[in-house]
Length: 68
Ligand SMILES: [Zn+2]
Image (cartoon, rainbow, N blue to C red; front, side):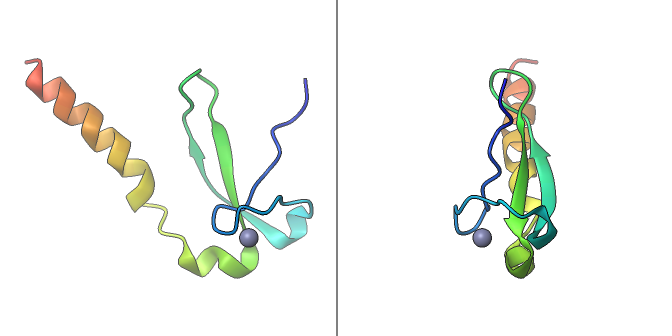
């Protein structure tokens, strides 16, 4: 089993040097395990970690509310 290649969240270039990258957050995958999201360190000022992961969660909560 090969490791999932890390790709920069912002420029989509592969990250080969972890010294120049930063872990942003973990995204759950449709098939269970999900993946870690990385970005080049120089781009992290563009990251907005609290916003992106909360959007799918809000949709799930809305669906649950509809079913009650
Ligand atoms: Zn990049």
